[in-house]
Length: 294
Length: 246
Image (tube, rainbow over the protein chains, first blue to last red):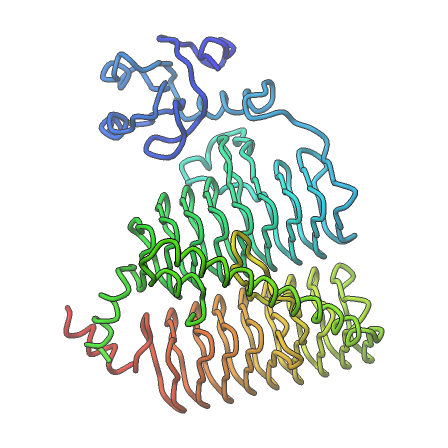
């Protein structure tokens, strides 16, 4: 999508440019369109190499890198949301909309709710009583959604978006690959400004697991009860995430890592590493520390 | 975790021996789990054959779902909106189940076999004893073997609580919101568990003990003991450590 393809009443491009996604500065998304509210975000913008175009007000426009696409607006945040809503409504930028397809071999419980648009339920899927599948969710072959789980909840935006009217429409996707189990009362968020939450094949989610928008979970992971993955978390393959643990925003966890019960992970975890504690540190170090206290 | 083939194989240096051991374990695990699962499915069919029985004076909200087979609910119970009671649940008299709570859903044991992960089919049930109260959005899993996950008499559970397979919670306990009780935990009577605590699997907690909020309990707790911290230690030791650090 080019900036000049957007209707002139929404945005006046100063420097035209290509973009493939929308997103905040410092967050996920490649060749993205972003915005700055405030001149204090300029250094952050310089560090983010994934930004292709920026919406800014006249004041901060002068100090923006001339290689970036630029669009001037009095209220950049509002323009950003308006462009997003236009893309979601009028174009196929965020993927085509289609009536929901439920495979004939899938079993959907009569009390479950499956949205009428943009849901794909693969063969041999099982959707339990009172489960909810909202728009823009793709379930692969043999996915089991147990009672009370909600898949495709809209991302909650930071409070600075509360005043924006009309609110941005959720247009990301949730993609769940084959033979994933989602146990009771889980919540899987979908991102608002495009992108997808992805769960790899054979991954099993226990009860009350919460997966944030844009999180990517690899293959064969075990996510035990009540753990929470925040926004943009990236989990490798064969990872074990213990009960009641938390993985913070944007954290990368390597293949085969082991996060013990109740850990709060705020730093990246390398492949095969075992971490524990709040905040999580290497397990051996943590046990040495525990010995001193006990 | 001792028998996890991935961990055993990881300690072997020679790559070809490592790969063959991994494959052998994978095949063994796959056969064992699939055989166990096929037997488990048959046994569920035989145990959950009876039609659901609901006692007198029990009020089930119209949006709640109670499985048509294998559930026994006593008298004067309350089952809230959107709650789900699955087959294999035995609920005594005067029990309250809050909105969106799930009783008797499948437990969580997964076996890694080669490139797949296979869940183990659970055949047990859930027993909720008299006058227990369960808040909103709780999950109580069924037992893996032919026994039950037990919630004792007059025990009160808050909201968002997970009680895993084969856990046994005593009478008159109080468990606050967001807590997580893992598999095979054994709890005595009159225990207090504060908000967002986690109890690791196979831990035993003695009667009248207390687990303070946010604690992560990985070792047994004696009767009358108060523990706190992540991982949990005796409260006095935890406080002494915090006082020494500041």
